[in-house]
Image (cartoon, rainbow, N blue to C red; front, side):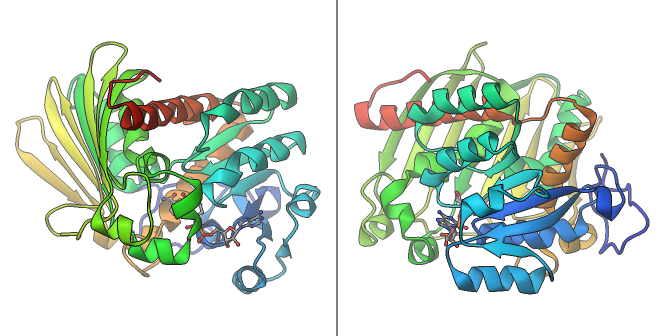
Length: 370
Ligand SMILES: NC(=O)c1ccc[n+]([C@@H]2O[C@H](COP(=O)([O-])OP(=O)(O)OC[C@H]3O[C@@H](n4cnc5c(N)ncnc54)[C@H](O)[C@@H]3O)[C@@H](O)[C@H]2O)c1
């Protein structure tokens, strides 16, 4: 839905996306596990029209207190089973370290809950069969919290493609680059229990699959940067990948987590689409989208003034409030009307298979198939 659609009846801070509106008591209850990035969703849901935060779970007492302060009356617990036992929790939203996601998704399904899981959905392809089995046995549904897709310039880029503005997408060039010393200090699990092919490349790989569909072959090269080595990173934190889709279209994906950023020249995440009838570029964290108009004239849509309140709440550029609220409300709307959502569990696991092939290609030095 276009950002101009401003629902009435609650305060807005500039333009926002809207996926419909229900009275507060009829909104779906969300229980959030992992209250660092999960705290962002907690606050983001203040702008929601279809969901409300009803519970929070974190091992750290300080994170639980911060959640209670943000949402007065919120139920909080260090015990995930206690959150799963709450009747008012319709959807469990998972924001714990990557390696915990598979287990927590399965337990949520088996407790009768739908799931939002942040990216990367999981980081071990061996967990794929048990998750598909749990979804089938319980009939529960999952939305991958693939934040980049739900960020304004990427939503606009998709709308333009679906309107036929650049013809058929033929080639995709996508990257996510970010200097990560601060993240190693904040979240040391990054160094031991995940891989940048999952933690970082899940953004651009998802974008490639969104436009090109199934990927049949990847060829990756990787390198451990000086910054990565200094923090003890043993697997590559600089990765380039060439990808080939089932219908022959091609893409390039790049990630670098030890670089010195140059923000005016290169945004952290970019998706450059080259189509048969034009090109377009979406960026994060800039609220900018560049495209051709029908005459081939380059147009830049700049959402900063209109939407920084929704996407950042006027805090740091790069906060995720707007996109988290977008995917929660999008998923709730799809649950309520019974229509399919994307990326769902099956699509998310296809992306996991692609990232698994990237890790294998880094190890073998050869092209690999998902
Ligand atoms: N763009 C995005 O969507 C985005 C951005 C940042 C992080 N993430 C993802 O969010 C996840 C968490 O990242 P983060 O930066 O918040 O990490 P973090 O290390 O800052 O926070 C993880 C939190 O989970 C809690 N936790 C760990 N085990 C738990 C358990 N068993 N039960 C309850 N709580 C538990 C920890 O106490 C901590 O507060 C990762 O998968 C990451 O990839 C997504």
